[in-house]
Length: 387
Image 1 (tube, rainbow, N blue to C red):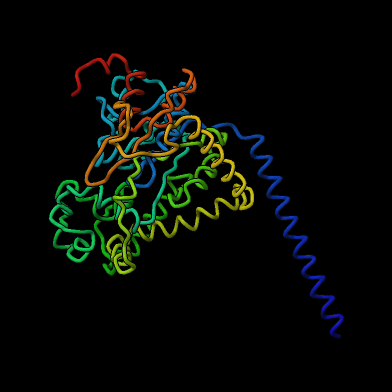
Image 2 (image 1 turned 180 degrees about the horizontal axis):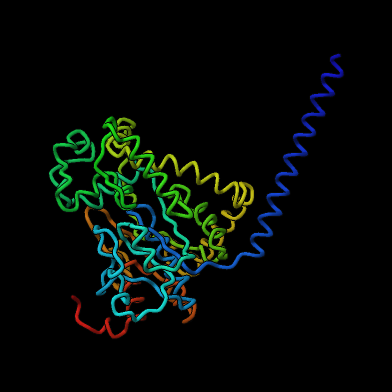
């Protein structure tokens, strides 16, 4: 009887192993077929969220689009944002009112999202994606970067703000939206809601369902390299297209570690963001499993990191980011804001012209790159005085 029982167990395990193998082969087959037949997407909307590594993604999109002469839906009148924090409307885009642009390929500057309005500018087959960051780390970054907003101005520390949040925070005051459920706000939802209020659960469900409906992919900042591989598969681009250096990143000296108690307060204060993040952190890994597979993901992340190290060795004198005071070329200095120290890069001086241009684009800060593309796309408007 024991022998039969053991035999059955071994038999069942063998069957399960075989089914597991079969499943993995079928998935690989589907993936290979998909990769062989997919075409690179060039109609793209990236909802650029705040303090989520979104500037690095913007740079990836800028480089991809520029190298292929794609047209960007850039902000009107040389602005760097699509008139954020107002809800997006089509005339915020240069070339819409004048009808000087026949087709827009990529929209990726800061905006407050409204799908129905964005869809008036972008083609029907547009791929929509965005990125989220853990609300605790995000809040610590926002407090440092936006210290001058009214909600934060009079507080000594993030802990001090959280302990007196409803006293310091007024929703009607300009720029205070940065201090409360900023992710939800960027996606176009009302951000002033607390846990325990009657419609909190309903509004959370609606927000999550709407994001799932409006976006093809939601990336996670904590898994940035994995996100880039997932994006590569979703857009049918190459791994080389996904290579980047971190942009608009703070130096370690201006980062503050938070106690578990403070972290819990942030989750309560930004409860809507926290719930959105938890949901899409889960769906992210479902996408990895269905689109790439865990083992292949590990291999491609390793390859991506190798490519980035190789590029850093070629392009950079310091092999990494430096404080803004150490950036030698003033044209490559990143914009500084709040109490954050935003790092930049120094180019290797011994590069040939082609490599120098490629490396320069990799480290070009957001404002400078946006201006460069605007000048290229709208030379007449760029020559006019700044409004």
